[in-house]
Image (tube, rainbow over the protein chains, first blue to last red):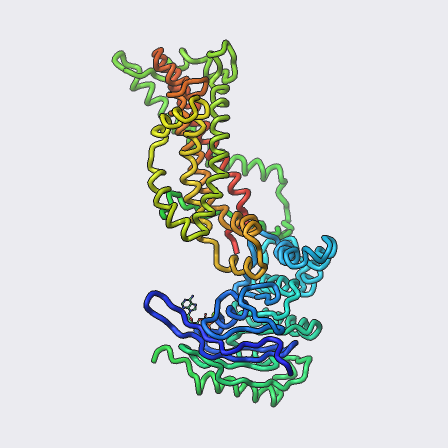
Length: 264
Length: 296
Ligand SMILES: Nc1ncnc2c1ncn2[C@@H]1O[C@H](COP(=O)(O)OP(=O)(O)O)[C@@H](O)[C@H]1O
Ligand SMILES: [Mg+2]
C-alpha cells in the first residue's frame, strides 16, 4: 500500500541550557490511508513527543513528516488532535467548542446553517447531542473526551491523532468509548494514529501496533500486524487465538525485552 | 514580574442540574426564601451594623469632653444634617449635595479608568505574549508603578493646561499598572493545552486574542481591574483637592479651609461607601463574566 502519512527518520533532541537529551532517534513509519495505528511504549519514552511532531506542535530535530505527498511542519486542522486531558475551552458550551472548530475550518466553504447542522451531526456521532448546551465543567470525563473527539472529527482531518485518549477514564467508560471510536472508524474510514499504554486497547483497535523501545533515544522496536477481521467485538475476542497471540507478543515486548528500568 | 494582586480563586458558580426530589411535606418556597433572607441578614448585615453602632458610641464618649479636637457624632448630625439627609439638593453653583459631587467625581473616574482598562489589557496582552516586549517593558512598568499618583499631577497640568483632563490623566496613570501587570500574568498562565488547540485550528492573532486570551485570562484581568478601580478612587479625591471643581475631593479641601469639620467627616463616609460599592461592582461583574472559566 502506498504511504499516506510518512514519518521519515524523525529524531528529536531537547536542549535545556547545557544539557541535551535525545528523546527520539531515527523513527520511520509508513501509514496507509484508513489505517488504525497504535503506538505503545513505557511512560516517558517519547510517544507524546512523536505525536506532537506529527501534529506540528513540536518541531523535529531531524527528519520530517509527509502527509498526502506534502511535507508538514506546522499545526493545522488536517491533523486534528484529541489531547489526553480533552483540552476543551471551559468558557464555551459543548456545542460552541465544536462550533469554534467548524467555523474556523469551513467558514469559507459552508453556510452558517450547514455549519450548525455539521456541528450537531458530529455531536450526535459521539452521542453527545443531548448535552450540547452544557459547559465542560458540567459533564463527566468520558463525555468531555467524546466532545474532544467530536471536535476533532468535525474538522474532517486527513489524520486523527489521539494522545492516550482514554487514559484518564475508568474501565467501563473506556470500553464504551473504544467501541464508539471503532464504529466511527468503520463508517468514516479515518486514518488514525493513537498513543496508548494499554495492551488490550492496542490489540482491539489497531491494524498495526508500533512498539517503542525505552528512552532515551527511543526507536521503533517492533511493528505487529493485528490480523483480526472487523467489526471486532470485545466479547468474542476474549478467547480468539489470534487476539491472544497478539496480546502476548506485545506484553512480551514490553515486559521482557524492554522492561521499564526506572529503579535500576 | 510580581503580582500585586490578591490572588483570588476565580469564583465558579456551579450549575449542576437540580435533581427533583419529592419530599413528603414540601416546604413552601416563600417560607424557604424568607428563611434564607433572614439568615443572610443575620450573617452579613447585622454584625457590621452592631460594630458600627458600638464604634459610634465610643466616638461619642471620647469626643464629648470640652477639650476634644474632633466633633462627636451628635454634633455632626446637628451641623451637617442637610448633607446627610439630602444628597441631591442644588442650592447654587457651588452649593450642591454630596451625591451630586460624587457623581462628578465618578464621571472622571469612569473616563480615566475606562481608558486605563482598554490600554492596560492591550499592553498587558503584549507583555504577556511576547518575551521581548516583557524584557523591555516590564522593568519600566515596575518602576513607573511605584510613582505616587499625585506626583504625575504637575506634569499633567503642564501638558494639558487644564485641570479636568489632568485629573483624568492621574486616574488613568494610577489604575493602569495593576491592570497591565495582572493581565500579563494571566496571559502567561494560559494553559499550553489552549494554545495547542488554537494552533491546530490555526486561529489568527485577533481570533486568538478574543477567543482564547481574554476568556482564559479574565480572572486575572478582573483582579487587576478591581485593584485599579480602588486606586482610581483613592487618586481622584486627592487630585480634586488640588485641581478644584465641584468634585467630592475639592469639597473636603473647601470644608477644611472654612473649618467645617463635621462636613468633612460626612464626606469621608460618602467616599468610603462609594469606594466599597465600586469594588463590589467590579467584583460582581468579574464573577459574572468569568463564571466557568477556571473550571475544567
Ligand atoms: N519540552 C521538553 N523539554 C525537555 N524535555 C522534554 C520536553 N518534552 C518532553 N521531554 C522529555 O522527553 C521524554 C519523552 O516525553 P513524552 O514524549 O511526553 O513521553 P511519553 O508520552 O511517552 O510518556 C521525557 O523524558 C521528557 O522528560
Ligand atoms: Mg504522553
